[in-house]
Amino acid sequence: MRVSLAAAILLGGCGGGQSVKPLAQESIANEVTLLRERLVSQEAIERAPAGSVDRSFLGYWRNVQLGDVERAAIAYEAGLREAVGVDLIALAIRDARANYRTQTPRVEQVKVHRDRGTVRYVAMTQTSGGAPVALSMRWRRTSAGWRIRHSSGLDGELRSAAQRRVQDRLDPDAQVLDPRAVRAGDRAANLQARYLARLRRPANEGR
Image: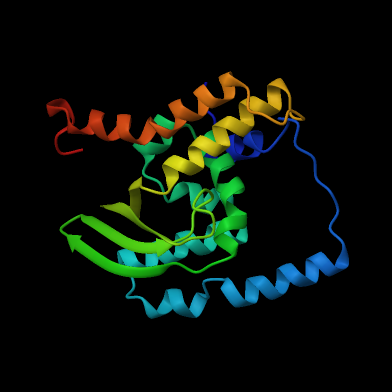
């Protein structure tokens, strides 16, 4: 049974031992200030040429910051969403949001050749201990616009999301990850590489 993207995202956010706690007024005020300082502005997006991979990249980052999971997830090309699973991508976006909200990426280089584009940038990841690291995002131009084919930062985000999903199911209060959660994370972190390897096979030439 096929499930729509929106439905998969909604289902992905339910259960799993997660709870929603009300924020204190002070925390809300701090978050608003943080967003004003670090949010990728609509003006910054519009300064990038219309239809450019630069604009798509900045738009993706802003959507993650704002928690617009559906728009952020649709930025990945359909084949990658299918290979990874929309529910896992959505969970990874939700989990990574806090990290994205603390920073704006520093774009170092943008290369475009025909229908392929690569954005190289510097940003902190969930596991870089607050230190900026060099990252890249590879895009493919489709009839619907630029779509992400591979993101070097996504591997770690998928690992963390898969670990949490399994750990929440097994024992959400445990202080140490269950080996099954670790293995699930390892498998998730390898999904992009497996997808790219499949695309390199002769039968997939021109996809």
